Image 1 (cartoon, rainbow, N blue to C red):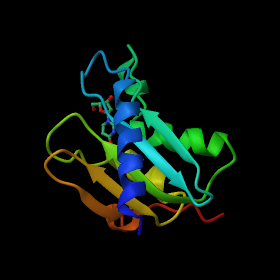
Image 2 (cartoon, rainbow, N blue to C red):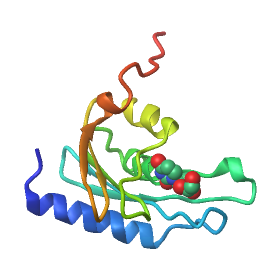
Image 3 (tube, rainbow, N blue to C red):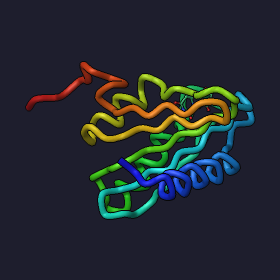
Image 4 (cartoon, rainbow, N blue to C red):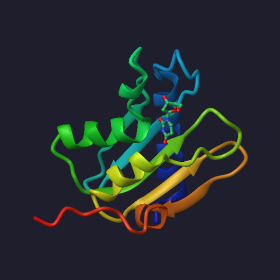
Length: 130
Ligand code: THU
């Protein structure tokens, strides 16, 4: 569990990232902030493309930023959509999160904050057993 202070910091980081969203097609900005187990914070936003299917969501952007920095152990991901109600992570992002284990996910909105985990969001995640 996060302290309220740290949760507030992460929410603000997710909102800052949301301000940088590149979403000219959907006009649906999303921001994410990811706290790692060694107390680093990585942010991500959704980045769209003329070739619509190439869009990357905020959650996956934040995870890619952390992994690119050598961090793969996560504590909490905060996601903030543009609505007054929570914007729940898409299926692709749920699978992407579960790759890195069971960690806390906070879905922030003005009216409601949902506190859940990756495993609750995607109980039967795909695992490649080689
Ligand atoms: N989006 C996210 O960034 N995260 C989600 O979990 C849901 C959807 C973005 C993708 C696209 O740029 C826009 O929201 C509308 O689908």
